[in-house]
Length: 266
Image (cartoon, rainbow, N blue to C red; front, side, top):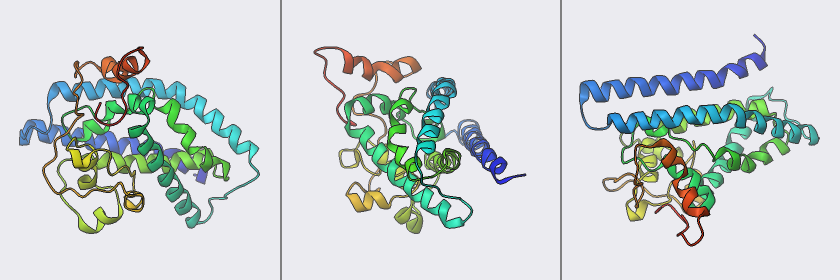
């Protein structure tokens, strides 16, 4: 198996880990622990959102891949990826740009209109981690153009993105407490509970993807110090309609005279 063929397998492995972990956690929580971490209507809403996301990404992802390949062909810079530290540089650069993309999605109205779907469940579990915007991908990719412009191949970028996404997804589990060393350096379940909270002191905090150091450096870090209440300050009126959840803030944003969704308190 060539290196390229191995790279191509990693996103599939990451997807297997993500969906496998969700399946195990959901079954154990709902049927054995019965602890209220999962609720059927909420979970199936997340699954429906995921199906829509996958359908959109098949077409949108192909278009974005073509655009990024165009950028790669235009730049004279190249990273061979034959040395381990090339992958480390790519990982850190990707995570740095993800932080700014994620932070922007909480502060720029049209980006929040897309991203809010990830936050409007009142529960925190791995099914919530599956809630992704159908429209956000058309915006977020712009933040990652510098990765390709400095000479990283889009395929290598896709590999690192898959690994980082799997890590970020696993932080949505409610069954892991504080992990002092990991919490200090990385996005973790404790750090990400803060991010999904609507407690006033937690709003728009901990935007890191795999690393939490960017939040510490740029002043958006908050430690989990009190019980978390999940969801958005203004709950959606149709919490189990995936089309409504994906588009209701866009409708508000595009309707003259309506209040624009400005920040996390939607």
